Image (cartoon, rainbow, N blue to C red; front, side, top):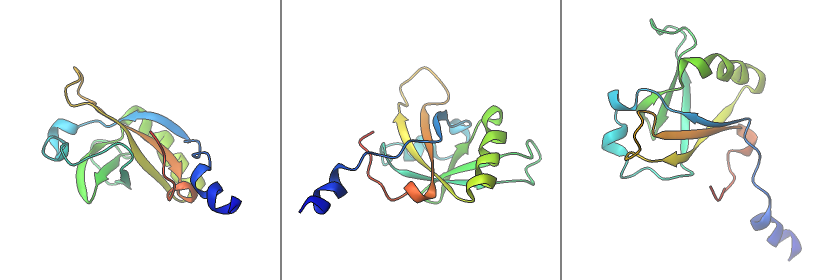
Length: 121
């Protein structure tokens, strides 16, 4: 019984990077998809070493839909994390399209070993 309860009361893993905004939301599908996106949704981070604007570019996808990029000022650090951890995942922590800012979706980054957790964000 105790092991059964531990599964539900296990503390959420700590993110390796917190509150990273997603850049370029206005250029991709984020505005169309916001009504379906929820806090806690998993995001895919895809490296784009051939990107002509930034060799450290990391595209952000929600359910196979491109919604933006990790900002260039953060991308180099995230690429280093990908090398170190081999696999990282991201989860939405904030969604506020009514905010007076262009980067209205924010995410946390975790090692993939923590990918299957449920977090009360």
